[in-house]
Image (cartoon, rainbow, N blue to C red; front, side, top):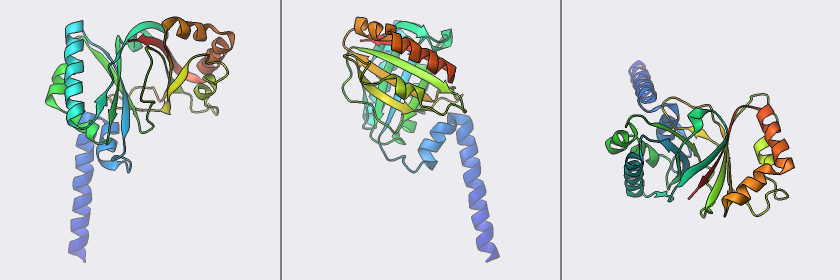
Length: 235
């Protein structure tokens, strides 16, 4: 009995050490996705925002990610380029955006820990954040998208982003992705809420953002969020 207990406690200690080293190496969210989350075998989607040193490095990065994701049975969309950063600090001005969809969430860990990925993302200077969710986006996206990122205040009782994109004020737009997100980078970012609205043309997106009720809603979001970023991306 005592021997069995010692073995059990030793196993727990080994598991704790493995998790601890994993957190140091790849970050808490990826450790959770790989080992702990009961949903890790379910489909999973990632908003991948990058700003690499030049177009050559950006193209090389996208090719590496596409090859690795495809090898794990996932899919990467053609991607978007930044047109306008309407709200947010300089550190959220990412020149490129793409969406990664994996058949199984835990397969993403294989992609983000691969040597080819690490080499592609660590060019200098470079910035990148990845925000993931088990709530999947629409499969088909139009040419222009408006991306809202927020860090909601703990005392914010209303989901102000969800209230923003109502059918009455979207015009020809469509909600593509509306979800809470986890940061997948080693250093956790503050963003925990994502809304993506799609339009066929940039002008339609700008017109929507300039509507009086959307401007008012944007102020309400700011009042209920610690941080807010709003950007327009186009193909």
